[in-house]
Image (cartoon, rainbow, N blue to C red):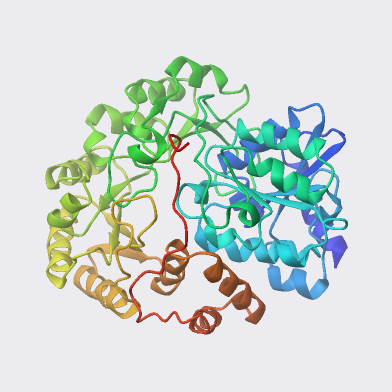
Length: 501
């Protein structure tokens, strides 16, 4: 029932601080294709909200994928914005931020729940909003979005969004809009460019920071701010490696500290390599001196020292989390990671010395050239490490991504990954808490990471069938992709970098 959706929105709005209420001629429904608690934890989403509402001619209102999609479909609830409780289908522009491949299903669901055809070819520009997309997925492979987006902003959108809004506000027809947007160097228009992508934009206006604080998110009431953007490292699997984003751009420590608002209780320092900031220990200690809780989005094991972990403890850390990355020293070297055995052993000792409840290590399995011997090395090493401190392993299957040296590497196989997960569980039972993500859904992510428009259309089919894993198997088989066919598919076209004429 529509009133139930309204009640949820009004309850959440009553607990928010910092929402922007205004009116303006150009109206944008800034929509996140995952539920509210995820979307409001996205610093990029909040940054674009502030950028759009900083324009005199534009108002941006937020909308999200419902928490219970099946219930929303059954009740035929419209997707409403949080600021005015209006259906997003009434707005001139719907702008969607897409973080990773498997959120494409959420894009399709939120549009169709709103009464907007997900496929661009089925929309009527006289009745339906212009569909603009962007987000972290554009650093890798957004081509599965081709049949759904009218236009896509590539890369960091804080500057480009203003050029796009100027264009949308001054062009008359849908065709004129597409032609004008296609001329913007950082905007990809699928019907004009096909699968040849536009250049990735980079913004030097740091830092991004929270506009709205709310207790109803994964990071409850935490003020988020960038301590840096990009990365200076060259990890072979990572989309945010230095060759993709131009290296690390630092926010000065004084700027970070000055932007923390009065009344904030917790501060989240965000970036791909936060612990590489040269002043990070000073920043954390200063925030702790103010009585604030502190969270960091990324901790590298080679950066964790006694003063650093002591600062984290003062900032409220109870679990020390860092990346092991690969199950063996050989694979970590292949990944060009700096996490050596001695670094991980030091992390365990520091976790114990500072009375952390757990040391949590993230790693991938199913890596290129990985064997059972690598898994056995992991079991032996983690068993020894567990004698130093309490351990948990967060394990994700490896998925090769575009714009990385490990692009094109084949999928290891669901059975292979699940077999190695089971080997780890058995080998580490009673020694470490093993917490894996799904191998099946990682395969779906792989197909999309290596795919293009045709794979995106298959997701549309899978969502229509029910959005279960079996529905993806059926939809992918219909275009000739099976889990056993490990050779990655390639979309047409190439990614142009900023130097491309």
